[in-house]
Amino acid sequence: MSRPRILVVGAGFAGYRTARTLARLTRDKADITLLNPTDYFLYLPLLPQVAAGILEPRRVAVSLSGTLRRVRLVLGEADGIDLDARTVHYTGPEGQVGTLGYDRLVLAVGSVNKLLPIPGVSEHAHGFRGLPEALYLRDHVTRQIELAAAAEDPESCSARCTFVVVGAGYTGTEVAAQGRLLTDALVREQPLRHGMRPRWLLLDVAPRVLPELDERLSRTADGVLRRRGVDVRMGTSVKEATHDGVLLTDGEFVATRTLVWCVGVRPDPLVESIDRPLERGRLLVDPYLQVPGHPEVFACGDAAAVPDLEKPGQYTPMTAQHAWRQGKVCAHNVAASLGIGSWRVYRHRDLGFVVDLGGVQAAANPLGIPMSGLLAGAVARGYHLAAMPGNRVRVAADWLLEALLPRQGVQLGLVRSWSVPLESSSPELARVPGGPDLPHGTKENS
Image (cartoon, rainbow, N blue to C red):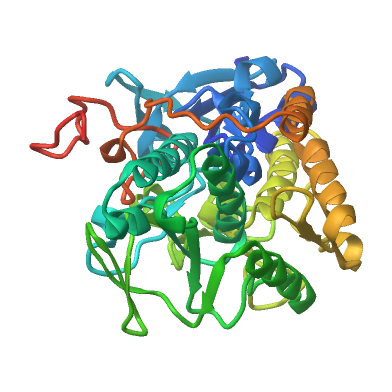
């Protein structure tokens, strides 16, 4: 008798945890296949430190084949699912197509940048969901400071050293906090003319920074940002973006060459093609993470609308913490559907949050205890080291080097603006010259 085939689509927090836990639970009683565009699990919370030049890119990229020993990795992007035939169609990294069959399917395709119908944003802004975008931002910020330092025109200098971040959630707050430290370090090595300093703006329509967190954490983060020199503007966003700058909703025009879009995420568009009930773009599942009407299909992470049993009538938010925990529950239920172990409903308990603001600054509330300053910074970094499924020593080594040595302000030139468009449905992959997604007429050296 052949072994059951389990197919996990996506290796983000939910998919990676599902595959790892299933490998332990089934112990060679099932064939587990993981379909993912890259050969690594991205530890997304530390991505701002990659953009800031603190961590090298591979530090936050955990090898799938190296940490998932009994899981078969197939490189490719899922682009079609046939629930009746129980198959998933995919396209490989070199354009080859293939089909994978399954007896159990786990959809953990995650999320992509959230778009809003604001003129010019899709053309002039860049998101922050993958390594290519982080590498592009690091190079771009470094280049703008270098060009600003050499500029004769004060207006050009000012525009190049002005950086606008839209979205004051986790990602936007950390990008602005880390970015400010990066540009300060760059300017110390290459001073700007005319007595200018780098300028960072953090915008959000919300009334406060980190609106999803406790007000004390919000006040802590807001205070750190303002003391660092970040221009925090709540109740304000972008009305229009152009090549020369952004028009704000309050009528002010800010000359800039940098617009970082961190307004949130939306579920991967793949789930919309399945023709099953959705909740704001997320695939509806029951508390066991099963898709109603298809007991062989499970979904978890950002692509799944999971009932929040702690808040009846609501769904769990799209966070890494929930995705990681759902992955474990999903694995247990997939195994239970094969007669291994018992079923579990997804129920969570808030263990607190950490927001790394760079340097020794952070905001944290482990187990509901609010912290700030050096202690919060230690808790934040300790949490990340404990949560990472690999590369801990390398990450700690980079942190130590950052504390002892000056930051390296150099451009690598590996990622161009056109290769990381905001509207990409695959932010984990950079577009390549001559590829199918390269806009007609786009120059490769732009």
